[in-house]
Image (cartoon, rainbow, N blue to C red; front, side):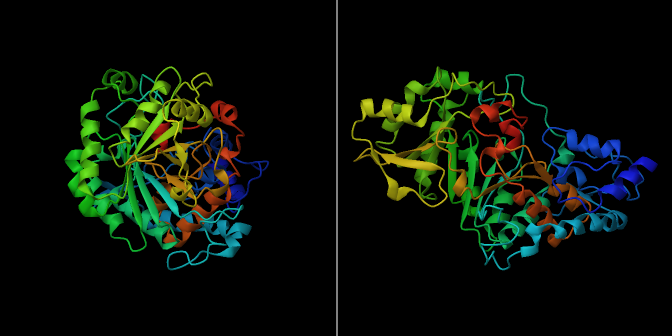
Length: 450
């Protein structure tokens, strides 16, 4: 107990610091910093001095905390709240955030009126108006590029954000200027309250685009409810047009249901363009890229070819990597009239648009590895367990869930967000290239949310 107190005295006030732990810090605090994927901010966000009556270990630090389970009015999912003693103990830790130079600018109001400063602007001047929220780590498929064959350990349900917490954070980000929100997973449609979440976010003033990325298995069943809630953008994952290969890639059945869901989404008229995400891997589906282009001849869809990216557990290696230029050459062998469709590209787009003249649809290329687009990145990610992730490839995370459950105010939460945004690297999480990314500790894709 004396060592925890000693460590607490040393750590209070250094939440925004990027320096190494000072001499004399507690072993628990040092251990928290050493954990792969745990940022200093995440490790410091809990003050071990607060009183407690039951021990629930804080991830990575071993500090106890107290929560009381109650029922939320909307979802019936367990909601966690904190006693007043925890609320008071959070204040000095969060107060130290304001001493960071990044926070001296202050936050915008009324939808982020200033884009040159505020909690969503990083040190490179990038304003983040796009939030990707992972709703669950669970999925009804087992795609090879997403998780290992044995699956991944899932976080306990009590560590997942509740409906109320998701909507609170969405509202908070929108108040600072976020105008585009995408719901991901896992598979977001397996979450029982998906329609409630969509309706809650869809009702927020300032949300211009509300999308979901889904594997399509459950889409037809839930499409009407999602559209009524305000969903207006959709990405459906499909990596092959061969039924037997679909089962091999996903380790599950469901090919016909996905095709039917694509057609249902088109027929609904609820989306400007139905997007299809296709991860291209050598030896698996690189021979189908031209077939996917042909798929756009009679369907008004946007097929986006995604370069294979390294994540924990997906056994990435460069032998499986197929570059943007190689895909283009392959397609042009069959469709020599394929042309650049630059007018379809929007600021901050991750995809480079192309089309075959006369086809209803178009294609795009997400060139994260061969031609990165980090300089115009406007995206932040919120994991299903409540961590802000400032880069898909970076391993630094800050927990908003823990801050909320300790009783943090919206203003204090924004200061935590600011720390996460400030730590964003210029590109690729500061890991260099795809080889550096492949060697780094990160979450599996299913636990990031894409």
